[in-house]
Length: 185
Image (cartoon, rainbow, N blue to C red):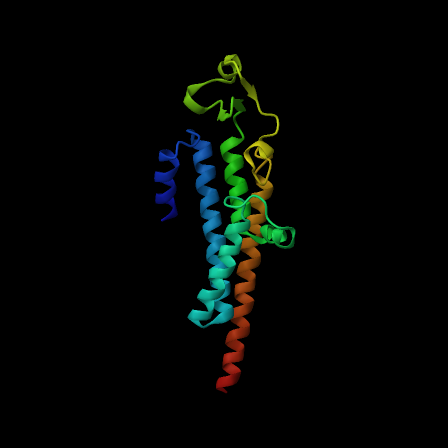
């Protein structure tokens, strides 16, 4: 299902029009969905009662969403550490790096544009009065990570999260089934 979503949203969203960026975006979305599924399975295994699992999942996922970097930029210090266990934070970082890594970003009198938009080349944008390249894209756009940095460390973190969560699911279900067998005996 996420393949269909990315197939439609990527091209209609006007994102980078090349195959490498499309497939990197698609791979990132599949990885993020797999980590989200692992969180859901883990919470379902821990609570075993649907209402409790739904409540815990809602609270945890909303927290991850808020600290993930897309909706809120300035997170209070006491909760800012949660972003590092949020799969949405790492996925958002990868997606911004995919989108901005190939292009130079310009400030054209309050309008921020990239050398990819409207078919302009970097030289075309430099020739426009008032347009200058932005040195610090992360600060200017309010992004949680530098979009010019490589994306592979973030992908490794998501893969590690997936492995750790799957192992936690296995351990949780093993303990729950052993406890259940003991209670039935």
